[in-house]
Length: 108
Image (cartoon, rainbow, N blue to C red; front, side, top):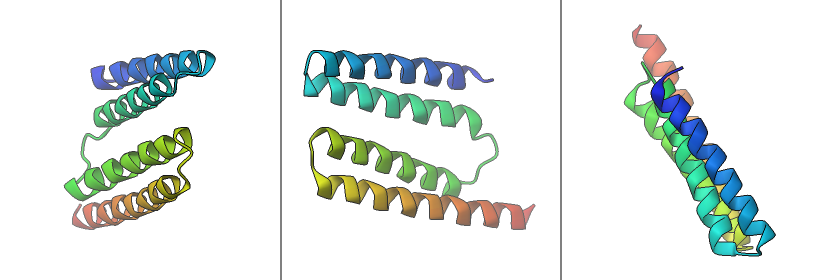
């Protein structure tokens, strides 16, 4: 496991704790900061795993993670439109990542 993977997992855990504290104290800002921190940790963890991924795969993964964060922000703010936009962004990102994977494997 790479250093980025370990640090990313730690950041995700810290974000989960921060989100829970926000829920307990009914502090939406802390909940949102916790979810953002979890997203950042997820990105860092994935960066440790990317190794030989193509730029298109990385862009797709980034878009997918951005969509997850957007969906979570929509849940916290009770904004159904943002939740839906986040889900759409995740699907687009997943498709882009898969296309990049196919292209990379075709070149190998």
